[in-house]
Length: 210
Image (cartoon, rainbow, N blue to C red; front, side, top):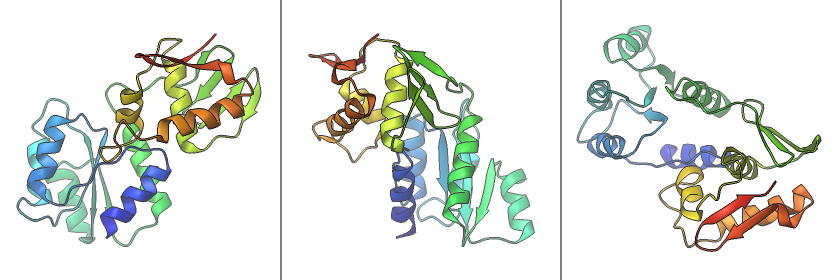
């Protein structure tokens, strides 16, 4: 129940989230997908979170690992951060806003950080401040709208495939056939004030025009 609640909350913050409930599945998923951050409970079935952390630390480019656990003694925290090699440690119960802040802080420490302020076609996005504007006019965007717009700005006029937007900004439970991306782009067009600013290239994807 807690994992589902955390996933729902992070998705509302425009993060793509996959969830699994066993340690062996967590390790397998991290070997197949380059996750930015792994939120890891120490008490997992099949393979413990401690063992998952140890194994992932042997990878050349492991995800940033946030231990989220009820084991809150100082000795547990020190053990998790030093012996196990976790990047951060948060004990239950916790405030969700703090969890979000810690996840974002860890994602900024990724080896290939995303660009900061980006501009294209009069549109400017600043992911560090989560602010966007068009010709200097601030845009009031939801987290998901901002994420889609920033992805299009990063592409600098090149088309971004529908399935790539789904893979990057949603998660494994959203199929490419759903209308979530189209609905988000439709709202973006309205807020940009120019329906033609975001075009659809048949067979290629969405493009932010100059």
